[in-house]
Image 1 (cartoon, rainbow, N blue to C red):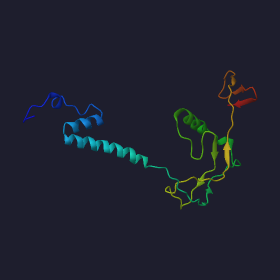
Image 2 (cartoon, rainbow, N blue to C red; image 1 turned 90 degrees about the vertical axis):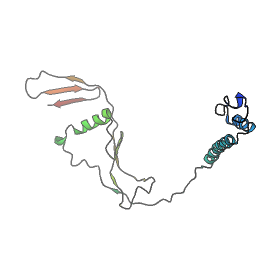
Image 3 (cartoon, one colour; image 1 turned 60 degrees about the vertical axis):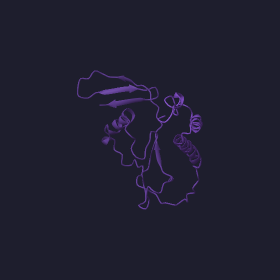
Image 4 (tube, one colour; image 1 turned 45 degrees about the vertical axis):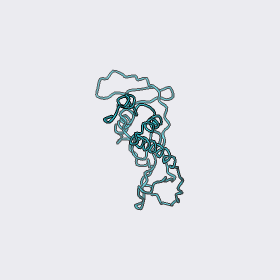
Amino acid sequence: MADRYVPADRSVLLDYISPMLIVSLFKSLKNRHFLVVLTISEFILIKILVILSTGLLVLESIPIKPTNITLQMSGKFDGSTFDPSYVDSGPALAALAIQSYSMPYPMFSNERYAVQSIDLPATWSDSRAGVLATTVEYFGADLDCEEAAFNYPSITSSSCNATFILSRCLHILAT
């Protein structure tokens, strides 16, 4: 442009960015803009390499040798020492927190079951990824809920008897 006259479509109006890459590549070859040709060629080559290299990624099966590990049960379901006089509101409040406030279930339990707690051997490490399987005792609840009708007598002292009736059974609660 400094040496001789150049038409506007090859100087001021020249656009290599907006058209597709192939069109820009041929246009730059025609105009003998070799630096632009080199840049567009490298960009096309990089795109092709990305496509080809991701095609080289393949899922591969790796056999895992099963290992026998001795698992120790550290807990046991035993109701022989249950004393109803020690029952407080703790379990009910924990259930409320789990259902209403997204508190996690206690370890070795979920919404349906509680299983014996298991101690992993000292030789086990997290780097040995895999699945541990064993037979355990579990405790499960299958409860049906229904509304109860409460009958409260007039309260005249510090204690009273309250009766609520369910369709399948009658419960008397003395407080």
